[in-house]
Amino acid sequence: MSESNHTPAMKYHLERKNSKSFLMEVSLGHFVESQKMGGTKKKKLVFVKTTSSIRDAVAQMQRAQVLSIPVWDDSTKEFVCFLSVLDLFKYILKHDVKSSSCLPSSKNSTPVSEVVKDLGDDDAVQIDLWNPESPVSSLMEWFTMGIHRIMVQDTDSPPGTPNGFIVSQSDIVQYLHSHAGMLGAVNNKTLDEHHYLDADTPSIGPGRLNPIAPDVSLEEAAEQLFAFRTSAVPIVEKETGKLIASLSASDLRGVSFSEIHRLCRMPVLQFLKRHRAHQNITPFTVLRTATLGDVMRMMSEQHCHRVWVVDEDGKLVGVITLTDVLCKFAPFDYKLLHSRRI
Image (cartoon, rainbow, N blue to C red):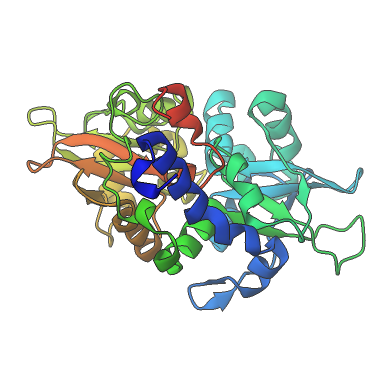
């Protein structure tokens, strides 16, 4: 059959096959060795133990500038799960961990094992060590179903030791962006052509935005993150609907125990202006006419996990996350499968 006789569905699958074929040729081990982040090789693994305090876990994330950290169990000699900033923040609010019990010494603080126990099997992101010989393409199914990072086995380290290499969604998107010339038509299609902003596309369209007003308290805004299991919430002007800011997990990473309960009562926009005193709080945005390549370039250059879609007046239309981007390079686009568009 000639290419001109291909149906739209067949063309879609051919484009998908071509755009992800080169990911099958790169092993995870090679990717870890060669991938450079900000001009340097992947950093040494940062982790916490189940016996570490919540305070220590927060401090580790802040120092390493990460949003999630693996938890190691000395008794089983295994990694238990990934623990995120949102997991810790949720636990602190839920159990009302007072600063007075956390600041004097780490041994008097709640251990990380209690947070893991509180998460349960459904919410805890388990860690399976991936074989470094597996192709990068094997990650796509996991990443498109909401897993944000995986751990690759370090074959040079002795068994039963806390070693490994983390590969994240951001790493893969940056890699795709650096190989934009190999992505073909998928890279050059607009967000509309990819059906990202269709109202009937589950977890992609406007129905998942749940915007909040600037005067909502930080605690209420954080509850939105927990309730909808999302890592960011948009903040819009009440009168115009224009996007003016967003609250994400990274904004909660640096909140100190001594201030957490006072800050939680503060209006979310006021908190962001104070917390990011020397930074621009305006979110990264694109129009719906932007291409997938435009989105990946912005994510790579700005090191952001999402790009908000606005109209010509700045009103919020949708959001494209790392997960959404990677869906286009998976064996199947799981989100669009639900909308029966492929």
